[in-house]
Image (cartoon, rainbow, N blue to C red; front, side):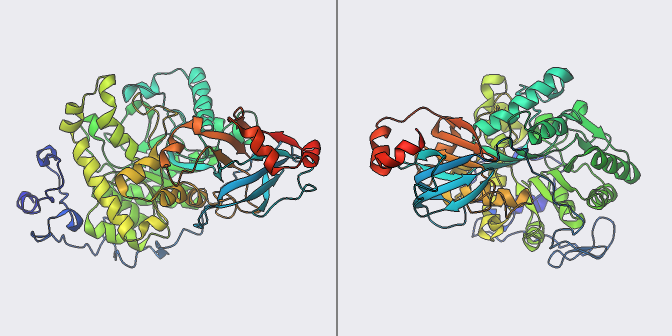
Length: 519
């Protein structure tokens, strides 16, 4: 394999040091990374999976289940939040509507009654606005709330991996609730749990959000991530599973406790310096058994999968959400393309980017991040994600979610959309669609979440500016003037300069007399 690795040299445009690759690594730079004057390495395409059963990456089946389609046993999770004011009316007048259907933004009015959007576009009559709380657009953009598909409410902004488990449970619960509010403060109204530092933290906070006791996004709760012995990234936050029977019981018990999704930690992480990103930790029988148990219980599986082997395991046994997906080979990419209508990918680019660029202030210098392999992984991951985009996998699969909750990636600094534009060549519209309409899909409520359309939940942002012109607006919460969550005003800013005169030009004095006009 060393000979093949040496022959398949990455294109000169890649600056990473190939010597930081693990000595036992088998990943070879795929065709999309190879200079045109060098022949690509073409790996053998396996015709059996790790269990010795027939496998065709282009027509993927596992034990009679069509892996190109979502498993029919998966149940649609409840995302309903108790509404304490079903009679409320909110109107946005003359806003720039970015509706997340793919249509270019257009000017118009939007009316919300209770927790649903009832009217989009056109001009609302004075009668329709009676008793409404009215927000004047004045050039601002109205759009859907955003989705983070790789969320750790309970990650404690620690400066080390082990620090994630150090907080006592009482303080940890309060921290988790504050993190939920921070996501909402930053415009994230949908989040998918990617593991909880303690088993019940996600579930407790989700339940409190759903009953209206605390503010937060609609949330799909996870439990502790699972790993076999010697396969944990962080021992103190891991639920250890011994074999196929054990993982079946553990997954079933977690589902009975009330999680919406479970997580398998199936590959390493460079920061550990013991389990490399290209190391695979789960045996195939445990992946298959755990996934089967989850689907039988009606819930989905997500996976920490950086190595090519672990990504392939996800695709061979039906895992639903792939986190990271960095070291993907050409045959595995083919398999992913065949399953693009089922599998979601959330690469968590911000973790790689932040560890390289922002961790030095917390004792992890750039030289260290590069020497353990993060510069190499970032370039490899970006190359693979661009190839996914080229193949059309972006249409359904690639979502933001940046592994926030470390000292150098703290809660409140969510910037995935600008990284999608900066690193992956997404247009601002593509990035926004991945965080809104695609967010509704990964939440399994595509007809109710992620768009500004009649009948959808009123989870809305009024942005001071046009994020299609400047995507970084959405990385800074001060640019979001109004946040509506479940038809309730979560946040509103004070008046913008000169706004009063603009309001007068849009709403007659007679109309203003009967309206509560909000600045």
